[in-house]
Amino acid sequence: MITGTQVKEAMKTANISWVEVRKCSICNCPVAYERQGDNLFFDGNCDCTSFWNPPQPRIFEDVAELINIQSNSEYKSELAGKFGLQLEAI
Image 1 (tube, rainbow, N blue to C red):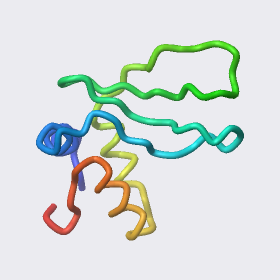
Image 2 (image 1 turned 90 degrees about the horizontal axis):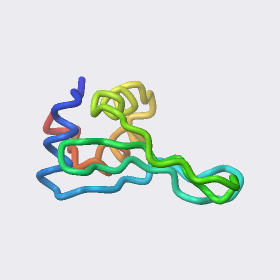
Image 3 (image 1 turned 135 degrees about the horizontal axis):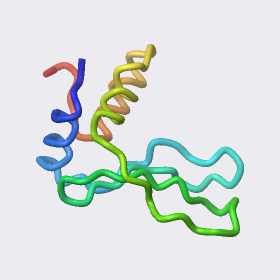
Image 4 (image 1 turned 90 degrees about the vertical axis):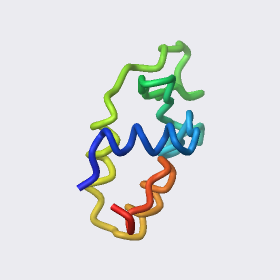
């Protein structure tokens, strides 16, 4: 099982500050996690809304859970890789 600490350290080591996790199903804009130092935010803004919300604070355990719940091992590995993790090594 991946932990939030592993996600944070992998992102810092790989100097990853922004990770697209999907695209909006309506307007195709990216929805992403953003790391600012030791803090994590989720930016769900897209072109579908007429107002802008600042990115919402999240914890790295949220990303770990997102990765851990994936049942498709190929997608799980791809998702983990976006955050700088190599599943074979964990």
